Image (tube, rainbow, N blue to C red; front, side):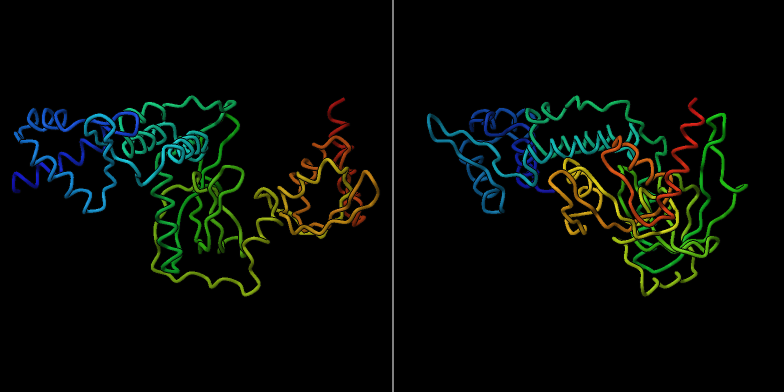
Length: 323
């Protein structure tokens, strides 16, 4: 490698890691660092290198207020964007604590050492349970590759026994699965597709998939009537149940909750000054009933009668057990 090229690369690294708008450097400071690194140089050669970086598309800004001072301006990611990404990594349950630290360290390398200190953020997360599965990234990558190739995958699935020990579900059953799409729901990573053993479209938690392998077998074609967005709405929070068209009556203060859950196109009707109704398609499961119950009487199921009766029976059962 030619010395001049090595010097240029070292200069680029120095400007990227050591400078920003609040921390510019003079050519004299650059010469000092380059010389200490084994690249003795003069003012003219450094100025030529900077001009070469600018011509190559690097946003090196020159502050001419007092003496020539240089710093890197626009970067691939702004500091505010990096802060947001760091918060997302810290808050994500499917990213392990170890992998979170590794990713944040890599994100910090995308800005100066001075701004990187601001990425050491203490985001408050109330008793967040992060996965202990360090291979989630590789599992997700394998699933995406299978989706692109329209191939099946095979894996075992992990659950917990009464002693909080990880065990393989259904006595180490190997699932044959045709992945269609990846989903992020309730801060968990899921894969949605056709399960041969279930004979239908279901979801699996990615962090609970064990020993995944690509199969040479072609995936089961996506059903013609399959709509991922509708599936996510109907299978409420990834729990299976009988899919139903349900009518709910809500106080006006709950409109934001209904829109957050079912989207802005949810079918709603004003009932009176204090209430509205919403026509929704959901999985009539205990998870859905628990969501309704959580609003402490501000929301009620009004139709169909079968779902109303099921909800009342469950509520009475829970009340009886709490006595």
